[in-house]
Figure (cartoon, rainbow, N blue to C red):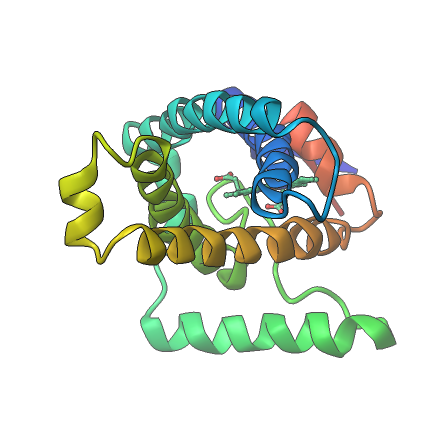
Length: 205
Ligand code: HEM
């Protein structure tokens, strides 16, 4: 079996700090949001941890962002496809995950160094990393100190609006934390992509 290097070290470091931090943010966030309903930890500890880990996450994001900004590996997110071909291939990939995989069809995507993602992955990861994650960070910072950021909070419609956006993104991430590892387990063995995110090397048939 051939091995190719697909996940450079900065991406792997970013990814696992990110995954662990997101799980902790979800748990502390649930405690903050559902105080009186759940009792996972003291409220004050939940708020303190949520704030600290939030700043770790924001700093950590820049490992991923700067790495891709200053590396030719950015190509993994921009394969030279026409938009039509991109959507056709995304549809083919969705059909595979929703149907073909259950009758043993081969995966339509073939991994290579500059095409490590299928079109569905490259599109969803970009939407998440460049839109939903920054919205979560931005609303989180505003909610961290609503007095200091009063003017911005008011500009966006008040605490309720900012908080609702933050919670909607939270709901998205709760779903993502289940769907993403499920899809990541659909390699040639269930653990293949997980191993690759630790070692950097993906095994190719
Ligand atoms: C239990 C938590 C998680 C597990 C087990 C996990 C697993 C993986 C694995 C195995 C890969 C590589 C294969 C692939 O692309 O499918 C990957 C890639 C990726 N994951 Fe996760 N993940 C987790 C949490 C997260 C979270 C919370 C985020 C973002 C909010 C995230 C964002 C990404 C991104 C953007 C990539 C592509 C990285 C790149 O740019 O090369 N993951 N994940």
